[in-house]
Image (cartoon, rainbow, N blue to C red; front, side, top):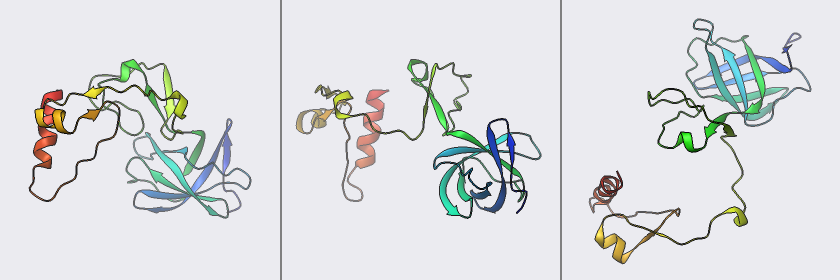
Length: 180
């Protein structure tokens, strides 16, 4: 492809080379390959909405494999795919507590938009050990036998293992009922 891409502002546009299910391959001009986890936007030809995908792999020959975060219906080879130069970000903070978001950070709980001050990328390094809280506080589940025999720590990870039909779902359902 001689005319592989154009430059729109400071963002580089490549061309869709292949669409297979939820993945697309995009060819960019030489020297302008987007980084892994960068967001790539494609304008839907019918609705005009931006379809966001994420760079998952460099295939070589200036081609990247992207995973679409929305449906690929209507996309065609040769369409412009613009590298945003940044990863997908989501809102964080107090205003986000109790809200439900999709992977793109858009609220899906029908409670209106979120005016969050901070946006964090969906792929981040874990906080260092010195930044993590080490306080020990017991999480009261409301299930007396669990609280007495196998108490859970707040903020920790919990695994629930057992054979078929022993009541794992019943325990989880009861914990949800007690927390809600």
